[in-house]
Amino acid sequence: MQSKVYANPTVALEGLVRDGITVAVGGFGLCGIPEQLIIALRDSGAKGLTAISNNAGVDEWGLGLLLKTRQIRKMVSSYVGENAEFERQFMSGELELEFNPQGTLAERMRAGGAGIAGFFTKTGVGTVVAEGKETKEFDGETYVLERGIRADLALVKAWKADACGNLVFRKTARNFNPMVAMCGRACVAEVEEIVPIGSLDPDNIHTPGIYVDRIVQTTPEKRIEQRTVRAS
Image (tube, helix red, strand yellow):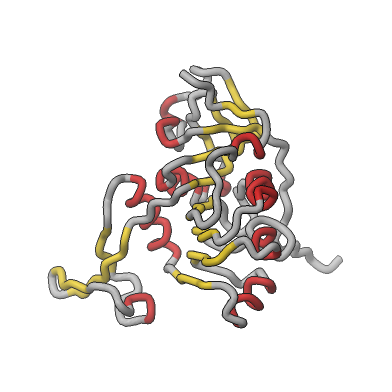
């Protein structure tokens, strides 16, 4: 079997990136984002991307780097309030935006990865979220149809991996990463540590290696989205 371990983020993305693809990216704020893979994606020069992620990073980090270089054509997100460049591009009509309730976005990716084409949910009924979508009544309640998401490429960040691609995430850095990994036709995982096969407790594996195609070990740069301190 061909090794899933790659030397660096640039090599790990070779053959997977092209203009116009849909990229699902893990993370919540700046927590659990595949920061080095995002930089490699920026450096690839691919344009016209549709980025599916809870948020768009900040102006100088995370997906904010791809907004700065105008490589993202459309964002599919839940929250975008920390990025001034995002706001500028959206308000000027340069960037397309598809808003999703946070839980709906997570379930859309999970469903896509599980082979579920769509599902009905009460979230968003009667709001702009439901405009143009099919609705149906179940037990006297109205539900809206949401489609599962399949991305061309998924980029995730994990704490540990073995050479088979089994992933373990650390605490809140797990967030959207497992669902992102599931929904990608190809998945690249950026990890802090690669451990020997058999050393991970099977009961503690968060994402099975069947969802992961490539692994790259990096040194994390953990930035704080909003630093808050108390007055002395």
